[in-house]
Image 1 (cartoon, one colour):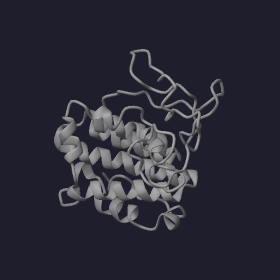
Image 2 (cartoon, rainbow, N blue to C red):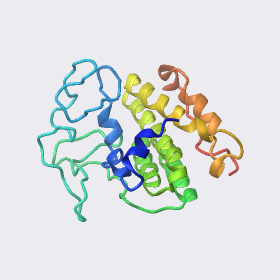
Image 3 (cartoon, rainbow, N blue to C red):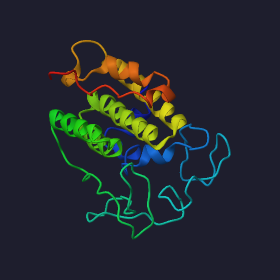
Image 4 (cartoon, one colour):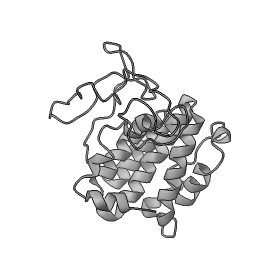
Length: 214
């Protein structure tokens, strides 16, 4: 896996790719399915398409919302798959941000959310794990978060976006595929599933994050 971008940022700045847990969702162009390098700009630099939702938090001109501690976190309500709703609408509560969990706790909570059909919320848990992981494990947790975002795109019916994120997730998991499996994660199974056809994948249940029995 190419970790050059992470190394150039420095380990003290994982927020630049993380930040708001909706980051990877907003970064994928809904028209061409490619990850945009400048998601805050009005049009996709790859295909020229305009924003899917001009009022979404990817807009460059709207002041960013802040949480109670002053961190950038969009306050717009979202549905169960993380899609933005109008301000004032009743949305589905998001996972609290910045929670420090053990690897076992992160995997167990993410799996519960995936089993409940809430991959967007599982992504939030896995992104917290990535942000707090030691440098040698950040690639693992980032790939797991990307896997959950890919599942979110599948649930939203965006096969192109799902293919993009699942491919990135598979590439990111490759360095961790050899035994022993870190924390019992089914890395080979996740890679194989992520690299399958996104359209067909939408009809199949993804593998559990961990090998059964762990």
